[in-house]
Image 1 (cartoon, rainbow, N blue to C red):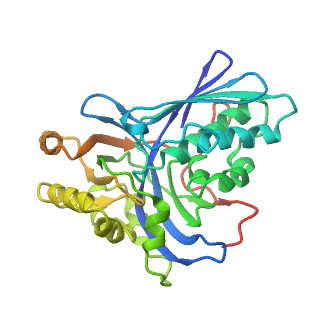
Image 2: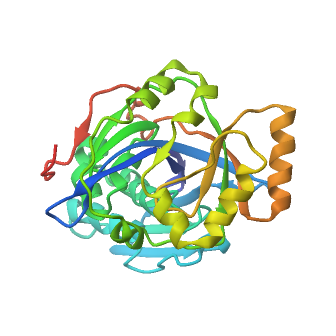
Image 3: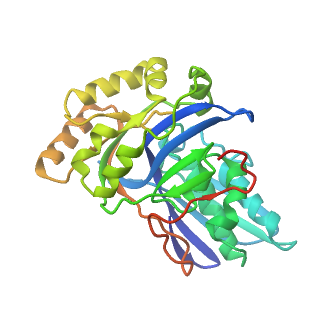
Length: 327
Protein backbone atom coordinates (compact mmCIF):
# COMPACT_ATOMS: atom_id res chain seq x y z
CA UNK A 1 0.00 0.00 0.00
CA UNK A 2 1.06 3.61 -0.48
CA UNK A 3 0.36 6.21 2.21
CA UNK A 4 0.31 9.92 1.38
CA UNK A 5 -0.09 12.59 4.04
CA UNK A 6 -3.18 14.82 3.76
CA UNK A 7 -4.68 17.41 6.10
CA UNK A 8 -5.40 15.60 9.36
CA UNK A 9 -4.51 12.13 8.19
CA UNK A 10 -3.50 9.82 5.36
CA UNK A 11 -4.71 8.89 1.90
CA UNK A 12 -3.91 5.28 1.00
CA UNK A 13 -3.81 3.66 -2.43
CA UNK A 14 -5.01 0.16 -1.73
CA UNK A 15 -3.76 -2.69 -3.97
CA UNK A 16 -5.53 -5.84 -5.09
CA UNK A 17 -3.99 -9.33 -5.04
CA UNK A 18 -3.71 -12.42 -7.18
CA UNK A 19 -3.43 -15.97 -5.89
CA UNK A 20 -0.65 -17.36 -8.06
CA UNK A 21 -0.94 -20.65 -6.18
CA UNK A 22 -3.79 -21.82 -3.97
CA UNK A 23 -4.07 -25.25 -2.39
CA UNK A 24 -6.68 -26.17 0.19
CA UNK A 25 -5.08 -28.73 2.49
CA UNK A 26 -8.19 -29.68 4.49
CA UNK A 27 -10.75 -28.61 7.07
CA UNK A 28 -9.83 -26.99 10.39
CA UNK A 29 -11.50 -27.52 13.78
CA UNK A 30 -12.43 -23.81 13.87
CA UNK A 31 -14.59 -24.17 10.76
CA UNK A 32 -12.09 -22.56 8.38
CA UNK A 33 -9.92 -24.29 5.78
CA UNK A 34 -6.17 -24.85 5.99
CA UNK A 35 -4.61 -23.22 2.92
CA UNK A 36 -1.25 -22.82 1.29
CA UNK A 37 -1.17 -19.96 -1.17
CA UNK A 38 1.17 -17.54 -2.91
CA UNK A 39 -0.33 -14.03 -2.76
CA UNK A 40 0.94 -11.29 -5.08
CA UNK A 41 -0.04 -7.59 -4.76
CA UNK A 42 -1.08 -5.79 -7.94
CA UNK A 43 -2.32 -2.39 -9.12
CA UNK A 44 -3.67 -1.94 -12.64
CA UNK A 45 -5.28 0.38 -15.15
CA UNK A 46 -8.21 -0.72 -17.30
CA UNK A 47 -8.94 0.20 -20.90
CA UNK A 48 -10.62 3.47 -19.85
CA UNK A 49 -7.88 4.61 -17.48
CA UNK A 50 -9.54 3.59 -14.21
CA UNK A 51 -7.22 2.21 -11.58
CA UNK A 52 -7.72 -1.32 -10.27
CA UNK A 53 -7.16 -0.17 -6.69
CA UNK A 54 -9.24 1.28 -3.87
CA UNK A 55 -8.59 4.57 -2.14
CA UNK A 56 -8.98 5.05 1.61
CA UNK A 57 -8.72 8.31 3.51
CA UNK A 58 -8.21 8.05 7.27
CA UNK A 59 -8.51 11.27 9.27
CA UNK A 60 -8.44 11.92 13.01
CA UNK A 61 -11.85 13.36 13.85
CA UNK A 62 -14.64 13.29 16.42
CA UNK A 63 -15.28 10.43 18.78
CA UNK A 64 -15.74 6.91 17.39
CA UNK A 65 -15.95 5.88 13.73
CA UNK A 66 -17.39 8.03 10.96
CA UNK A 67 -17.54 5.95 7.78
CA UNK A 68 -18.52 6.62 4.16
CA UNK A 69 -18.16 4.49 1.04
CA UNK A 70 -18.33 5.85 -2.52
CA UNK A 71 -19.11 3.05 -4.94
CA UNK A 72 -19.30 2.55 -8.68
CA UNK A 73 -19.91 -0.61 -10.66
CA UNK A 74 -16.93 -1.99 -8.74
CA UNK A 75 -18.71 -1.19 -5.50
CA UNK A 76 -21.81 -3.30 -6.10
CA UNK A 77 -22.49 -5.59 -3.10
CA UNK A 78 -20.13 -3.57 -0.88
CA UNK A 79 -21.44 -3.05 2.69
CA UNK A 80 -21.68 0.65 3.52
CA UNK A 81 -21.97 0.38 7.31
CA UNK A 82 -20.40 -1.34 10.32
CA UNK A 83 -20.27 -4.69 8.50
CA UNK A 84 -17.70 -3.30 6.05
CA UNK A 85 -14.23 -4.66 6.85
CA UNK A 86 -12.72 -1.15 6.73
CA UNK A 87 -15.23 0.00 9.36
CA UNK A 88 -14.37 -3.00 11.53
CA UNK A 89 -10.68 -2.15 11.16
CA UNK A 90 -11.32 1.40 12.37
CA UNK A 91 -13.10 -0.01 15.41
CA UNK A 92 -10.10 -2.27 16.07
CA UNK A 93 -7.74 0.72 15.95
CA UNK A 94 -9.88 2.71 18.38
CA UNK A 95 -10.01 -0.26 20.75
CA UNK A 96 -6.24 0.26 21.22
CA UNK A 97 -6.40 4.06 21.36
CA UNK A 98 -7.01 6.43 24.30
CA UNK A 99 -10.66 7.07 25.16
CA UNK A 100 -12.24 9.85 23.13
CA UNK A 101 -10.26 9.18 19.94
CA UNK A 102 -12.07 9.07 16.62
CA UNK A 103 -11.46 8.24 12.97
CA UNK A 104 -13.19 9.42 9.80
CA UNK A 105 -12.81 6.79 7.07
CA UNK A 106 -13.68 7.56 3.46
CA UNK A 107 -13.55 4.62 1.09
CA UNK A 108 -13.68 4.80 -2.70
CA UNK A 109 -13.99 1.42 -4.41
CA UNK A 110 -12.14 0.54 -7.59
CA UNK A 111 -11.61 -3.18 -6.92
CA UNK A 112 -14.77 -5.14 -7.77
CA UNK A 113 -16.39 -6.94 -4.84
CA UNK A 114 -16.81 -10.71 -5.06
CA UNK A 115 -13.96 -10.98 -7.58
CA UNK A 116 -11.32 -12.81 -5.53
CA UNK A 117 -9.02 -9.78 -5.74
CA UNK A 118 -9.09 -9.07 -2.00
CA UNK A 119 -10.33 -5.46 -2.08
CA UNK A 120 -12.22 -5.57 1.21
CA UNK A 121 -9.32 -7.18 3.07
CA UNK A 122 -6.87 -4.70 1.58
CA UNK A 123 -9.10 -1.79 2.67
CA UNK A 124 -9.11 -3.16 6.23
CA UNK A 125 -5.33 -3.47 6.33
CA UNK A 126 -4.97 0.10 5.06
CA UNK A 127 -7.19 1.41 7.87
CA UNK A 128 -5.29 -0.61 10.48
CA UNK A 129 -1.92 0.76 9.34
CA UNK A 130 -2.97 4.36 8.63
CA UNK A 131 -5.24 4.66 11.66
CA UNK A 132 -2.63 3.25 14.04
CA UNK A 133 0.09 5.51 12.71
CA UNK A 134 -2.21 8.53 12.83
CA UNK A 135 -3.08 7.95 16.50
CA UNK A 136 0.50 7.26 17.54
CA UNK A 137 0.00 3.50 17.96
CA UNK A 138 2.36 0.73 16.88
CA UNK A 139 1.75 0.24 13.14
CA UNK A 140 4.22 -2.57 12.47
CA UNK A 141 2.67 -5.66 10.82
CA UNK A 142 3.67 -7.77 13.82
CA UNK A 143 1.74 -5.48 16.14
CA UNK A 144 -1.38 -5.42 13.94
CA UNK A 145 -1.48 -9.07 12.93
CA UNK A 146 -3.79 -10.30 15.68
CA UNK A 147 -6.38 -7.61 14.90
CA UNK A 148 -6.01 -8.24 11.18
CA UNK A 149 -6.61 -11.99 11.53
CA UNK A 150 -9.72 -11.33 13.62
CA UNK A 151 -11.19 -9.14 10.84
CA UNK A 152 -10.60 -11.48 7.90
CA UNK A 153 -8.37 -14.29 6.64
CA UNK A 154 -6.72 -12.25 3.86
CA UNK A 155 -6.15 -9.09 5.92
CA UNK A 156 -2.79 -10.15 7.48
CA UNK A 157 -1.14 -10.41 4.04
CA UNK A 158 -2.12 -6.87 3.08
CA UNK A 159 -0.39 -5.39 6.12
CA UNK A 160 2.79 -5.71 4.09
CA UNK A 161 1.76 -6.93 0.64
CA UNK A 162 4.31 -7.79 -2.01
CA UNK A 163 4.70 -11.52 -2.64
CA UNK A 164 4.22 -14.03 0.18
CA UNK A 165 3.49 -17.63 1.03
CA UNK A 166 0.30 -17.57 3.11
CA UNK A 167 -0.62 -20.53 5.31
CA UNK A 168 -2.97 -21.52 8.10
CA UNK A 169 -6.28 -19.83 7.36
CA UNK A 170 -4.31 -16.78 6.19
CA UNK A 171 -2.67 -15.63 9.43
CA UNK A 172 0.81 -17.09 8.73
CA UNK A 173 2.58 -14.88 6.19
CA UNK A 174 6.08 -15.51 4.85
CA UNK A 175 7.47 -12.99 2.30
CA UNK A 176 9.17 -14.73 -0.62
CA UNK A 177 11.58 -13.35 -3.25
CA UNK A 178 10.13 -11.96 -6.47
CA UNK A 179 12.79 -9.58 -7.82
CA UNK A 180 11.14 -8.99 -11.20
CA UNK A 181 8.13 -6.70 -11.62
CA UNK A 182 5.46 -8.83 -13.29
CA UNK A 183 2.62 -7.87 -15.62
CA UNK A 184 -0.78 -9.53 -15.87
CA UNK A 185 -4.00 -9.05 -17.77
CA UNK A 186 -6.90 -9.20 -15.29
CA UNK A 187 -10.49 -9.71 -16.47
CA UNK A 188 -13.47 -9.45 -14.11
CA UNK A 189 -16.77 -10.90 -15.41
CA UNK A 190 -19.93 -9.26 -14.10
CA UNK A 191 -20.53 -11.95 -11.50
CA UNK A 192 -20.34 -11.59 -7.73
CA UNK A 193 -18.97 -14.75 -6.10
CA UNK A 194 -19.33 -15.62 -2.41
CA UNK A 195 -16.06 -16.96 -1.00
CA UNK A 196 -17.91 -18.91 1.69
CA UNK A 197 -20.14 -20.53 -0.91
CA UNK A 198 -17.16 -21.75 -2.92
CA UNK A 199 -15.33 -23.17 0.09
CA UNK A 200 -18.51 -24.85 1.32
CA UNK A 201 -18.87 -26.53 -2.09
CA UNK A 202 -15.29 -27.83 -2.14
CA UNK A 203 -15.07 -31.58 -1.46
CA UNK A 204 -13.65 -32.32 2.00
CA UNK A 205 -10.28 -33.95 1.34
CA UNK A 206 -6.83 -33.91 2.92
CA UNK A 207 -4.05 -32.81 0.55
CA UNK A 208 -0.27 -32.56 0.86
CA UNK A 209 1.56 -29.28 1.46
CA UNK A 210 4.58 -28.05 -0.49
CA UNK A 211 3.22 -28.07 -4.04
CA UNK A 212 4.10 -24.40 -4.44
CA UNK A 213 7.88 -24.95 -4.37
CA UNK A 214 8.43 -24.99 -8.13
CA UNK A 215 6.51 -21.73 -8.58
CA UNK A 216 8.41 -20.20 -5.65
CA UNK A 217 11.70 -21.06 -7.38
CA UNK A 218 10.50 -19.63 -10.69
CA UNK A 219 9.41 -16.37 -9.05
CA UNK A 220 12.84 -16.05 -7.40
CA UNK A 221 14.59 -16.65 -10.73
CA UNK A 222 12.93 -13.57 -12.24
CA UNK A 223 11.90 -15.30 -15.49
CA UNK A 224 8.25 -14.34 -16.14
CA UNK A 225 7.97 -16.58 -19.22
CA UNK A 226 8.09 -19.66 -16.98
CA UNK A 227 5.48 -18.54 -14.44
CA UNK A 228 2.31 -19.28 -16.40
CA UNK A 229 2.83 -23.02 -16.49
CA UNK A 230 3.13 -23.23 -12.69
CA UNK A 231 0.02 -21.27 -11.68
CA UNK A 232 -2.56 -23.31 -9.75
CA UNK A 233 -5.87 -22.81 -7.95
CA UNK A 234 -7.68 -25.66 -6.17
CA UNK A 235 -10.90 -23.63 -6.15
CA UNK A 236 -10.95 -23.02 -9.89
CA UNK A 237 -12.86 -26.15 -10.91
CA UNK A 238 -15.53 -25.44 -8.29
CA UNK A 239 -15.90 -21.84 -9.49
CA UNK A 240 -16.25 -22.61 -13.19
CA UNK A 241 -18.62 -25.52 -12.52
CA UNK A 242 -20.88 -23.30 -10.42
CA UNK A 243 -20.79 -20.21 -12.65
CA UNK A 244 -21.21 -20.82 -16.40
CA UNK A 245 -20.43 -17.14 -17.12
CA UNK A 246 -16.93 -17.60 -15.67
CA UNK A 247 -16.41 -20.91 -17.49
CA UNK A 248 -17.41 -19.26 -20.78
CA UNK A 249 -15.13 -16.28 -20.12
CA UNK A 250 -12.17 -18.53 -19.40
CA UNK A 251 -12.81 -20.56 -22.56
CA UNK A 252 -13.08 -17.46 -24.75
CA UNK A 253 -9.92 -15.97 -23.29
CA UNK A 254 -7.96 -19.21 -23.64
CA UNK A 255 -8.89 -19.35 -27.30
CA UNK A 256 -6.86 -16.20 -28.02
CA UNK A 257 -3.94 -16.41 -25.57
CA UNK A 258 -1.31 -19.13 -25.36
CA UNK A 259 -0.47 -18.82 -21.65
CA UNK A 260 -2.80 -20.42 -19.08
CA UNK A 261 -5.79 -18.33 -17.94
CA UNK A 262 -6.47 -18.87 -14.24
CA UNK A 263 -9.14 -17.94 -11.70
CA UNK A 264 -7.79 -15.97 -8.73
CA UNK A 265 -9.00 -16.94 -5.27
CA UNK A 266 -12.68 -17.85 -5.23
CA UNK A 267 -13.33 -15.79 -8.38
CA UNK A 268 -14.81 -14.24 -10.36
CA UNK A 269 -11.65 -12.57 -11.71
CA UNK A 270 -9.47 -14.31 -14.30
CA UNK A 271 -5.87 -13.46 -15.14
CA UNK A 272 -2.81 -14.48 -17.12
CA UNK A 273 0.85 -13.43 -17.24
CA UNK A 274 1.64 -11.03 -20.08
CA UNK A 275 4.50 -9.06 -21.56
CA UNK A 276 4.65 -5.42 -22.63
CA UNK A 277 5.22 -5.55 -26.40
CA UNK A 278 3.06 -4.68 -29.41
CA UNK A 279 1.77 -8.26 -29.63
CA UNK A 280 0.52 -8.09 -26.05
CA UNK A 281 -1.17 -4.73 -26.74
CA UNK A 282 -2.98 -6.28 -29.69
CA UNK A 283 -4.07 -9.21 -27.53
CA UNK A 284 -5.39 -6.82 -24.87
CA UNK A 285 -7.42 -4.95 -27.48
CA UNK A 286 -8.95 -8.23 -28.67
CA UNK A 287 -9.89 -9.14 -25.08
CA UNK A 288 -11.48 -5.73 -24.49
CA UNK A 289 -13.50 -6.21 -27.68
CA UNK A 290 -14.89 -9.47 -26.26
CA UNK A 291 -16.78 -7.42 -23.68
CA UNK A 292 -16.38 -10.02 -20.93
CA UNK A 293 -16.03 -7.45 -18.16
CA UNK A 294 -13.61 -4.99 -16.60
CA UNK A 295 -10.21 -5.60 -18.21
CA UNK A 296 -6.88 -4.14 -17.19
CA UNK A 297 -3.15 -4.59 -17.28
CA UNK A 298 -1.90 -4.97 -13.70
CA UNK A 299 1.66 -4.86 -12.42
CA UNK A 300 3.33 -5.97 -9.21
CA UNK A 301 2.94 -3.74 -6.17
CA UNK A 302 6.05 -4.11 -3.97
CA UNK A 303 5.89 -4.79 -0.25
CA UNK A 304 5.76 -1.49 1.55
CA UNK A 305 5.00 -0.06 4.97
CA UNK A 306 3.80 3.32 6.19
CA UNK A 307 6.13 6.34 5.76
CA UNK A 308 8.94 6.28 8.27
CA UNK A 309 8.42 2.60 9.08
CA UNK A 310 10.75 1.35 6.37
CA UNK A 311 10.17 -0.93 3.42
CA UNK A 312 9.72 -4.63 3.87
CA UNK A 313 12.38 -6.64 2.10
CA UNK A 314 11.32 -9.76 0.21
CA UNK A 315 12.47 -12.94 1.88
CA UNK A 316 12.18 -11.75 5.48
CA UNK A 317 11.11 -14.17 8.19
CA UNK A 318 7.48 -15.19 8.53
CA UNK A 319 5.09 -13.67 11.03
CA UNK A 320 1.88 -15.02 12.48
CA UNK A 321 -0.98 -14.17 14.78
CA UNK A 322 -0.22 -15.09 18.39
CA UNK A 323 -3.74 -16.52 18.54
CA UNK A 324 -3.10 -18.89 15.65
CA UNK A 325 -3.61 -22.51 16.49
CA UNK A 326 -2.05 -23.90 13.33
CA UNK A 327 1.50 -24.21 12.17
